[in-house]
Image 1: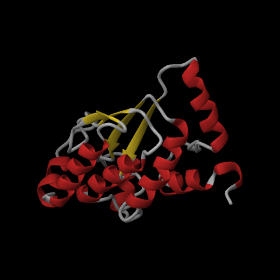
Image 2: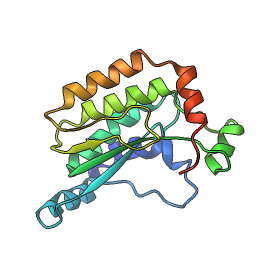
Image 3: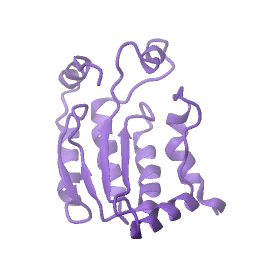
Length: 175
């Protein structure tokens, strides 16, 4: 059993918490999710962000599943999905250079986004990936548009030219 509802939260954030340099990363517990969900009556716009790739190479599927569990408990009005970009001159860039963090591939990020969207089974929410750091752009409403979003992400992962996409991402400037 999962007293306190923290296992999904810990799985969702275990990969990224060790890479943050800004102190504690608050994890959403079952109690906090209930409070956020209850605010829908008085606060119409609970907006959450999902950062694909934050858990690093090889951890995307697990991160997507655990994060979707947490987001399902909150049922946000909107979810903005972004993809991790490692920019020169940042602490994360230095960690990559030292071999302490290995970013997910572009293909893995597409699959992580797909698994995350597919796992949002209890959300009636708007999803947007329109930020410049994303190499696939779409928006839609769940559950209505889930199938189309999942198909698009599967197709992008299948056809991903890793070298070209990686080269494109490396040319991005800091935001």
